Length: 325
Image (tube, helix red, strand yellow):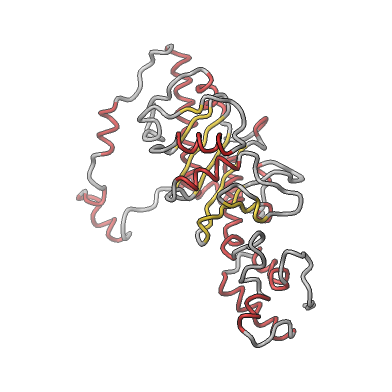
């Protein structure tokens, strides 16, 4: 280990430089600080003053513009994986391989979010890596990111969703083919199957433009359209979904595209008057007692300490795409 009395990158502290490989290994904040404290003491890189030591370790603000929390480092991998999952699910492949982005609000900085940017050597969702994610504020300004990278061009769509809805923790935007086609045809998506049925139980709001959403006026309009929904359609362009976490936002998009695909198939087979699942079927699904209250599940659910997790789609695809990061 070689110690230095300056930072390699001018916007970083010595501690951030030294701790980079540890953070890339997914070390916890507590473990990171413990290791760096030991190394700094041994290398005489920080003095006995705790405040000075914290500054050296990069745990206090370097500058208002470039501040980077440990949590941001920890969740970069999650955001990179979510972007890869969008590719693995077929939501951004072929001509749309670089079109789209998943973002996540920072848990310890609700005025910041991480998102796939632009300007990478290989700008494709399937190739995203943790260190390539960029940090933005709620005005869409770039706070932190790798050299040469910028925010995603439609960052205002993300920033306005986070600004308007404190409960939103994740936003996804892609250009799924069936969803785009149905919006171009002006066809309302109707409930066709269980998966995503609540998303389309009511007609979804539509942003009546195909242009890229790049300024505050456009971002705010799209943001306000989604109020009360988990998805908004951008006519001839794509869709944007929200969620309480990356899993929900990504799977909302997957289920939206499945509903759009089945709507298109029904439209092609039977014309515009094709049937769909009636509202009373949806109400039946909503108004059922919890499964754990059913006699044959009570004992099993009690042993499992609640209803077993059923999110296998997310677990499967995240495991598949994360093998090299």
